[in-house]
Length: 203
Ligand SMILES: [Zn+2]
Image (cartoon, rainbow, N blue to C red; front, side, top):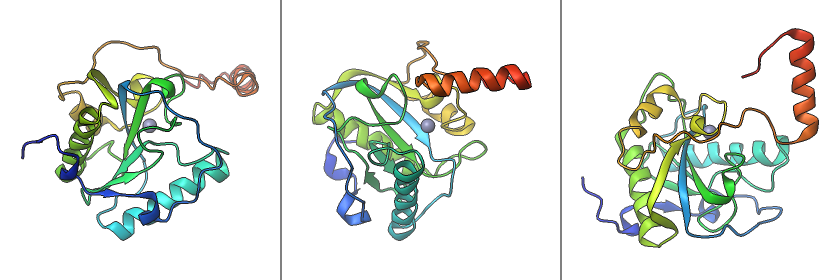
């Protein structure tokens, strides 16, 4: 299957179609970006429009109600049904990888890919959607692709998925700063205090 670079190759599910809650607030993302980050949800896999839509609504609720974010964090999500689901979209500042949000999109494949690979339909959808972003000039042609763990202390996007994206042509082996603690001072102090009292190294 070759990617012709046509956005029409991919079946996009809009926010209206998965019944998204409206965002509390949106901030424009300056385009084009020069990085793309790949995530996994570390949760359930999904294979149908109905399943995937339900999972995305749950992720959105978690991001908004538990994390207190303005909206679901990712730019886009991808199911093993081979569909791309609109998160914040191309042109809204995402919340998926602190320090890199201003210069990147975040694409999340739903499932936990520590021990298994996503179905090829999901991988093809990710690649085709990035190609669509290139065609729309929302992503620079020399963009760098990363896994979430390249920029954050996390297992995301899972060992197996991480191994797969490292074989993609735009994967960047360049070392970028890894953010291990929240940038929020209160959170950092809390972690430092916990580390001190319990001799735990959180990273
Ligand atoms: Zn992630």
